[in-house]
Amino acid sequence: MTTAVLLSCHGTVERLDDLPAFLANIRRGRPAPPELIEEVRRRFERIGGSPLMRITQAQADALAARLGLPVAIAGRLFHPYPGEVLASLHASGVRRVVSLPLAPQSVDVYHAVVRDAAAKQGGVEVRCVPAWGLEPALIDAFVEVIDEALARFPEEHRARVAVILSAHSLPQRIIDAGDPYERQFRAMAAEVERRVAPRGNPVLVAFQSQGMTGDAWLGPDLRSTFEALAARGAREALVAPIGFVADHVETLYDLDVEAHVIAREAGLVRLERAPAVNTRPRFIDALEALVRRELAPAAP
Image (cartoon, rainbow, N blue to C red; front, top):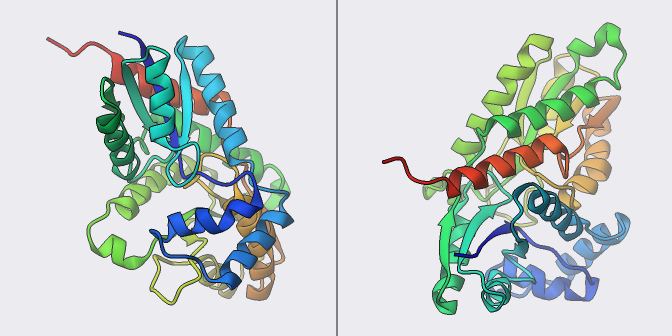
């Protein structure tokens, strides 16, 4: 049976003129107000467009080289959609697909779209990788980028720099309805903290990139986290966006631009960001291990 891997990410636009359609997808079909479209356009323009799909393709290429299997990419909320990609894979002779979301938490949100597309396509078996936030090589990759970023601080006070482990926020109502996202993220963050703790750095969790709505969102947010640190006398902090495995607008704008302004307003004098894992070999190790485990013969 010909097997392929499907890496699913959130998705993004290559053309800014597609932002209204993309935002409507995020909003479950509700058109975005003009002011929201304009604000998102401004952010994309500031960072020169989102590199998400380019990085996702590079991750797929690196994984394909490891596995010797075709590895395709899809966006949950924008082209190429899973249905489009599965149709192409099926036409090329693929009959089994390993669905691997490029988000370690709440993977069923991604798998549901892939399973639905496969049911409509027919003739494709789907294997779904379970939540993978505790995958050892993933934790290694996060610790690697944190250590790399901490090395930017003077050695004499490096251990006093607070490390903020961040993830994208969600509306609180989604968490209250039983979504495992927060629980799974905090479990992953706890494992990263366990590895970072011997360095002496205080480690905190924060949720970033809250939506531009009046709803309650999962916190604490970055502003309140920065303010709490400053109130304790901290002057420097490092944000490690371990909730993301590739650079996109939430790292390149929300952290590299907006968070610096918020940090200064809160009283911090220096804010650094750990790199995204992107195509680091240890991260690709994690993806490889997940796929090989899913394809391994079942124990008798």
